[in-house]
Image (cartoon, rainbow, N blue to C red; front, side, top):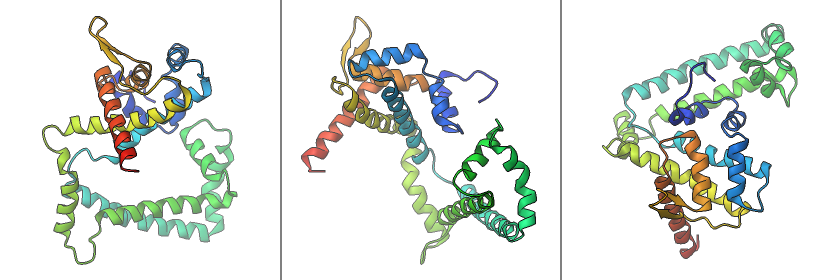
Length: 268
């Protein structure tokens, strides 16, 4: 990732930007941690299933970080979206010209595709992914499709709906995120992300363990919550974010269990 040592509380930020997420997650779970997770799961523990559970739990945490707004969007953000959409449209038109000129397409792509299947760089991996299912002439087309999708998203984020002024759009968008801008915004965001991760963890846990998904019991003499599910969730999530405490895990499990109970009572 980077040459400098990453603070434990910032590991999730590295994973958030990872180009090879599963491999990078696995680096943080050595045999000792896996053995402890197996012990907590119990007799049904299997290595591959446990690894998939770790990955799924962390993906849920990262996805929550991605989907929840961290601040109210400002004018500059809309301006960037508009500028990106215009640039992306121009870029897409240039790609169309290259695709129509087969020689230009070949000159542009030949060297990259020639090394893509054995090259070790991040760029080689990207080209391998793009050319995996299609022929060599399909790579630029797939790149253009990706650009067009990003342009569409940018236009939707910055465009004005029919009958709505630009100011109204910005005010509406800001209102949706404004609850994160209060003094307690960071705590609310962290709490929601953790609950989303624990919800995914609980699904995995019910499939692999005989132990119930409970917050455990707090033992003052040990200074910690004792309970297989709570300890396992803590082992996974504390590894990538040291701000996550056992108490926060216990609260998240309680919240998720209340949510599940409410859904069952309402027939959802």
